[in-house]
View 1 (cartoon, rainbow, N blue to C red):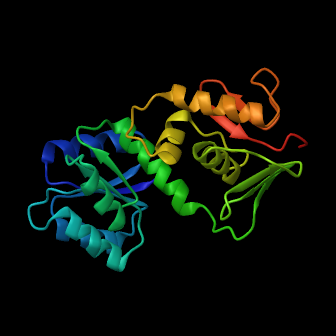
View 2: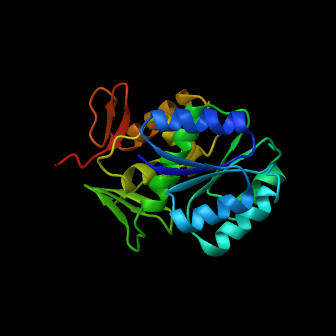
View 3: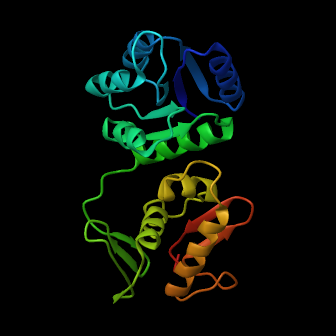
Length: 227
C-alpha cells in the first residue's frame, strides 16, 4: 500500500479518486492548488504524487519542475493532453508516468504500483543472473548457458524486467504499463505473444516451463529452474 498525494482542482475527480484509493487500503492526501500540493509533497514526503495539469494557481507542468527541484518523489501526471509532444515534454521534465483523462481507478493504481516498483529497484552495476540466464543491461545482451540469445527490443525489455524481479509474480497489466509503456487498456494478448516467443528461445513451453512460470489468474514470474 502507498501514501498517495493527489493534486487536483476538480472536486468531483479529487474526492472520487481519493475515496476509491483509500478504500483499497492506500493512505491518501489531497490538495486543490499547486502550491498547497508542493508544500505537502515536501513536508509529508508521500510515496507517489498524482498531478493534474490544469491547476488554478500554477500550470501543472511548471509545478512538476518545482517538485523535481526539491524532491525525487515519483510523479504520475494526469492530463487531458494526449498529443505526443506534450507527453514527451512532461516525461523529459521529470514525470515518471502519465495517464490520459478520463481514467479509471484501476489504471491509476496500476501506475502507482509501476512507479513504486521502479523507484524501489536497486541500482545494478553487474549483469542480471537467474540460473543459467545472464543479462547485460547496459550492453543489451543476453545469454543462456553461455550461448547468446537473439532477442528483439521488447523481448529483451520484458525478460530483463522479469529478471530484475526474480520470483515476483507480475500481472500482465503491470507488464503493459512498465515494459510497453502503453496507456492502460492495452491488449494482454500482446504480453502472451511475447512470452510465447521468449519461452521458445529459452527452450521451454507453457506446458513444460522452466524459467517462465504462469500463476493463473495472477500473472507471470521468472525463476531459477534449479531452485
